[in-house]
Length: 257
Image (cartoon, rainbow, N blue to C red):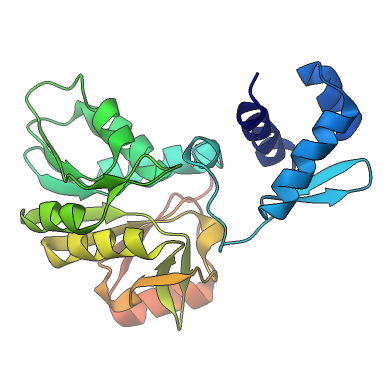
């Protein structure tokens, strides 16, 4: 196993267990404890984990972008719930844009029962997910693939996303804050998401409960630009009051539904 693959596997363990132990990892990967310590040193220097006595703990930092394959395994039940709720907002024949978030992959799966959809995306993973769907039109934005991401960005992506007018732009983010608005960890991603918003009639934000009150590096838009927020848990009353004042529909499932 390559060192990079092993470190990614360690990150996956951290997403699930929140902490890892050197001795256990050494047994699991059949390598020396010194090798695992070097892996943890590397993850610590990259800001992806924090070394602790005998192991490491997860780092919760909205400024850090984890690899796509790691992020897509976070809060899977929440993403599935959001995807199911968003599918109910999409009509047969709609033209939609999907961003390159991990949540968008779950949304794409949930939409497969729809008929005659047109999807524009800069997500390679979404295109792969929809490669077997019949009677749909799936358009790739074009652009440059960023290392470590299954996303297309840059001027070509902006041009491609801006070439279509859609019914709904569906996107996720790394943070939503009452004052700072909707934010993400990378300016290139934000540019692409703004292009989606500029060319769609309705703006839907898919965001799990952990993103509320969080501010990431780069601003996508003010909350005023969002028409619907779809989330996995009922937000605090202060958020519901804000959405009510701004005319934003908040969609979630109550416990037991």
